[in-house]
Image (cartoon, rainbow, N blue to C red):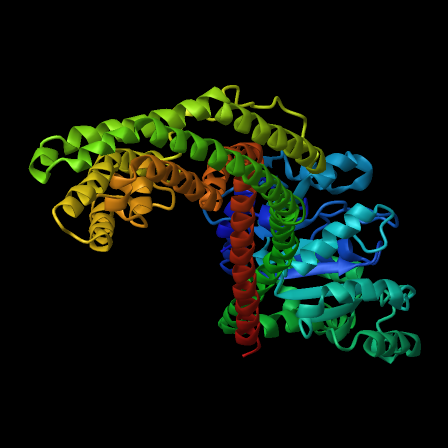
Length: 637
């Protein structure tokens, strides 16, 4: 799960905190090594509280340097020498995991001393490991730490961090009698030992000071030491499993004597001294913790493993939270771009679009009126000039049938040519396009200013709307115009066939109905018909026989009716002009907005991606918290 989180963080280009657990790639190896290692005893205490002397007494030789001033600046781990190894040695483990060996054990000891090594090099070192040929180290390892209250805060932090990582089965907490009352400093350690309650043994060192050669002196009967022990229990009882009165120097000298003369183990006076200095008590405590066959170590290791996993899961979960917030922040920042533009579309673009549409509608209304008038007059003139062709209606139906198609086609062409020429002559579409473009240019200029965009070159319609558009035939669009243009001749033919049917004795009303039905089948029926379609509709209101008999007067009335019909179709002409102008307007408006809308696509995608990543992180965080609790619960069992 940590690897999954680390991958998400790396993919996002985020650097975790320098103290982040996400950077600790070796924790699993360390905890594996730890739970498979010997029983570990962690020695802590204030500066000059006898930590080094205590360790020296346990191993039976003076290895670590003791001094009234701060000494150790680095964690020291004392391990037993392997069975196949013959020479003792020391090595340092750097913070980045590298391991380098010292030339000798003495060089390693010297490196530990704050006064003898560069502070920066000490702080860059995670720990110094010693591998020694000492009997006690066959059963356990000893860990020495920099002291609490060190003048170098960084060294104190090293110890506190190590404590929080639970690197021990037992913590030996050393106190000098005169400094044991410094409870406020002790509580700093206590907070770091929150998950080690019951596994901490207090050791009051120098308990025989001034009475080393008095075999009758029993430190347990000394009222002053009794007050020290009582004060420690009162302040730290939640953390201490017990307190041992101990004298490190005396214990070390006794251990050295025993090594030189093993027979002393049955000497009553020697045994009494071992008891008096606290060495026997401390050894019995360690033996009890280890157990006769090591089963307590196994339970301790299982518990330690669970607590380490719980702590690491909790730590990673804590690291995830600010990273998750960063992902949400990035998502919100990306979404803000989208929301800002959505708001501007709603508050700026849509009102501008509505205003532009209204202004184009005004231009279309004016120009639609003009188009209807111009084309109506042209159509009427075409009827007056060309309706003489209708004289053929007086012929017999047989004679008419052979000529009707060519006559209808000619009439349709005359009307269409006349209307197109009239529109072309007044440059109608060019003027209309220029008027519409002027409106568009001004409105888009204002819109650019409101959107804060840099002004761009206008895209004028230099030629206006093409005159060949043929908008008179149907609504705008190539398909509709093709359909209308293709049906023009058919409509004209239908109108003429209506006249031929009348001459054959068919009623005018039925002829008009027949013409309308055939016109619909032929593809007519648009709001504004072709010229021949108009003629067929107009003819339906006339008595064709009377029209033929009174040809001159009838032609005038027919021309007037044709022109009036164009007047009634003004809304359709207005819509025709508007549709054509609005298509171009929409294209220019969309061209203006397209770059901005396109730029929002990555922002929208980023917002979705960041939110999805944040949700992934949150799910992992919740799982880690649940796992941490599960590990803790198992450890308590």
